[in-house]
Length: 112
Length: 114
Image 1 (cartoon, helix red, strand yellow):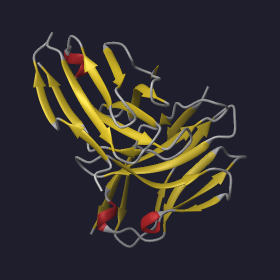
Image 2 (cartoon, chains in turn yellow, orange):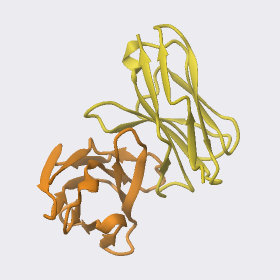
Image 3 (cartoon, chains in turn blue, yellow):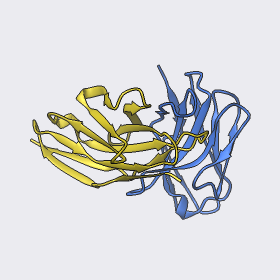
């Protein structure tokens, strides 16, 4: 049972570089989410996708873009990385709104 | 608007003693409430959820939580702490009323002493 798989697990970038964080789920869930976790801040929602073909901004979307490639995959892109985007990024999925979410193990991203 | 307040950033207990992690919320609708646990370098795992079926909710690993609408609280308890319970705990509210966006508390770090 893979659940939610995130790649890569670790990444170091230089300011201004771009990269895409990948997320895939094998539970046939409709909804997918991207969060960032910073010390003492809990998790903050960056973007979510309530269903295939739709995406919406969350609490902290600036500097990020997302793509819901199909029902399984939801990617997060940093077009021009900034040190303020150093964080741990979590992808999650759920069967639908108000349902529990299943989380990946995170991507630890450092931007120098 | 919705919000979640976890009243303690750290809670320290001895193994075998009760655990109480406090959470207050505000929501304009009938919310769904969740508790998640996060062990070091891992993603979050669901402990339990409240969705209006019963006010006392039992979860995994002996945890339970009571929904008190009059106090807008959803505190997490366990009768007897184990060393393996040491982790970060998050209270989460999904507001309902058609909103998909969950709000996370800032987390409570549970420390368990031998």
